[in-house]
Image (cartoon, rainbow, N blue to C red; front, side, top):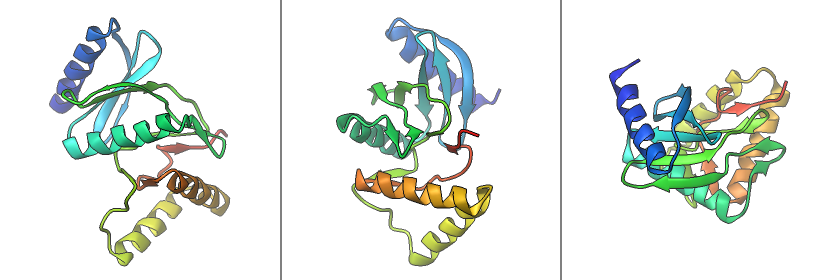
Length: 164
């Protein structure tokens, strides 16, 4: 286990303990943070960087405010709680088809990417999915999130999972 993951686990464990829970198993990690399941069958994600934490928290707050727990048939984690000091979000555990990881999502604004960067991102994301049909569904999912004011820029099979 990496030093960073150990640090994030310590923060997540402290968060859970403060709420009468404990971490039960590691669910995964990525560029922004790491996630563990809790004894209450929720997921606790500790994020390394403040900007990633704020984007993730704000996206989940928007979804919670609009009572969204699925978009176009994809389950979306529902925000249970969060801690701004620890940079931790606690969410429900979801199963495919689902969309997870909102650390690269922007609420009510798009990032300052050039048209070329956006084009390249879209082309790279499309190539990661198994078929044109999957990518078309991903595009519809991203559009449905935009209707909620969430601009999602981490479309990849690990984050948008189809129920195959």
